[in-house]
Image 1 (spheres, one colour):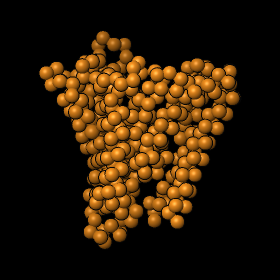
Image 2 (tube, one colour):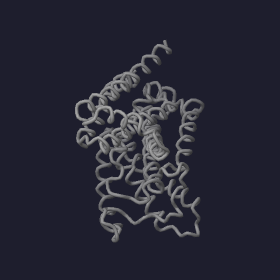
Image 3 (tube, one colour):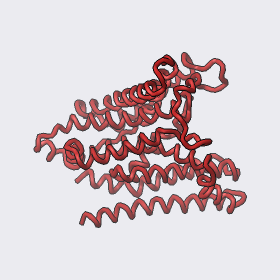
Image 4 (cartoon, helix red, strand yellow):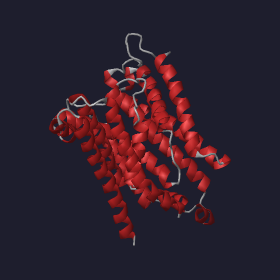
Length: 344
């Protein structure tokens, strides 16, 4: 029976991925001036050079880390819709720290501090939604989304106001000193050492979920709250902890972007990353080991779309519609199964 459910879940995910690819090919056929060239740009060009391939892998790093956080929230029957704000807050806090850190600290110390403060700020924001649900029965979906909107506006105020780089024509903070930026590992691409942290987190949370008491109790809380209470498990505590971990992973991904590929905090830099992470978690369906291939697939859709938009003259609006429709189909394929499992 378990094997049948696993096969059914895998089949649904493969169907979602296949439809997304077919949809991409159809859009290219309708709107690209040179269909064969557009196909090459979408499906092959992201892998055609060290630069393109490294950038593609770099784009998976925040998706992996954020996707883990979303997956943890899902497992506890929580939906964190505040990822964009948590990424922003983590990035801003980490960026300010990196900008004002004395060089005497050394790069390693600054990397650790930036990662910690980013994760901490994101966790605090996630905890607020967890507390509102645990003590006042306020939907975490609504509270996390609204808090995120507030955080984004506050962050934009600082980025374009007190922290604005006066020497730049862009809405951005000053450039973080190069000594505090994460080392690149696949030159000339933007891929840096944060990929190793992302892979470690996948392994860590897989072991935590499958081999620890905390992981077991978290699954029980998500699958049957009444049974969890009967067993003496604090459902309230796990709801708060899951939202805190989810926010922490979002904040961490934002902080790593700032001291990695971005090198500064720019207004609107996340560009839908929080929502893409939800698609990653939905595709993975609660399995940490599936986060990696899910992130690779979502990043592939973005990379291929960007190449087509630049090389084939397909309007950006069409590309945005393609990405949104693909995400919608992924959600439609996976959400009913996830919702059914959580209601059992």
